Length: 150
Image (cartoon, rainbow, N blue to C red):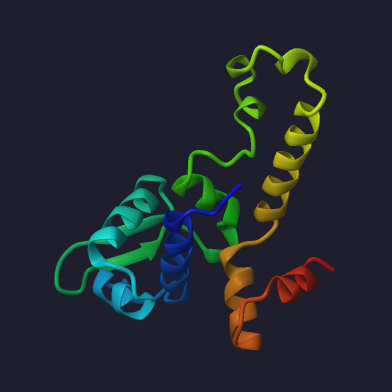
């Protein structure tokens, strides 16, 4: 699985929105400036997150974006799958019919296992985990996040 630009930008945007959870909506211009993401592209990204019911939008002078749920209730897998509908390493994992060899393929089971482990890994981290790590360390590293599981 290659993490595409939409996922990378979407995660940065939703993290910034999550930082303001419970407060005022975050304007798209603020996210665009802070994250150095084109406003036009960012509109597409936040539109996808909104349709996935991860964020809400409010129009007007005091408008912007807020989370639909508490940051501890949104895991990274939800964000990734909202922004990228191709999250498996090999197409036959989710759609065995795309390959004539799926039923007796020697490697399909390893791709299925690896896809399940990736989902398990990304599902184990929430936006709150990332925010907590950022506040404590000033950085988000998987080493610090890994220690959250202990």
